[in-house]
Image (tube, rainbow, N blue to C red; front, side, top):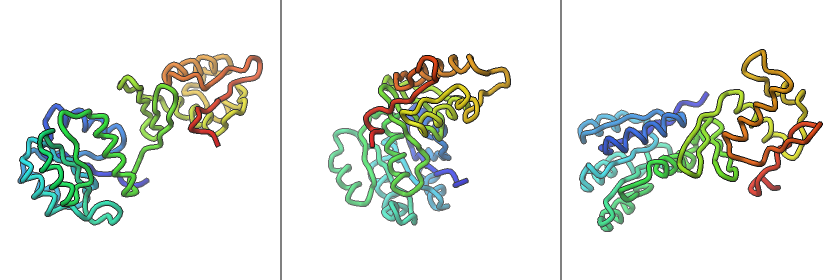
Length: 233
């Protein structure tokens, strides 16, 4: 199994850092935090960091100084971390300077933590360190590897191992009618008592959690996954 990607949060406001760390941890990343500049120096000097998020509680000059010494060599080379700097909306000059120094991204505060987590994920993918396997449905996006359903409303839910196995089965057989026997064989229930008609309940619970109409009941035959447009060949 590949090592977890390492994300450093440097001088990020506590309320943001707590929520962001939770998002990143549930997506399989290793999150480390440094609240003071000297802590950041020690953390970054040790190497092994993939992405650094620098909060706006650190002065822009201090953030750029960290970027000069430890960034600028990230991206595909793998020899240094990618930097995301958080800046205040009025700091256009600081934003430009950070980008010129090699920051991978600059975001303005106040910010959406879920969006910031997505930006981190994008940088990890560019580095070949992405851990997401995203499925986009009508009203939610599913990260299969971390078993998280991200609803358009901003709420998130966890899929059980059995629900992940069931969803993977449907994804592997688009537009094909799967019988109850097919499902029991390929995606067995999580307890030995769940057979035959209980498949109906599993499908209902999965549909509800995904908020989707793509899984159709074919009366007397089984179930069929009709992919959204983005799955079309």
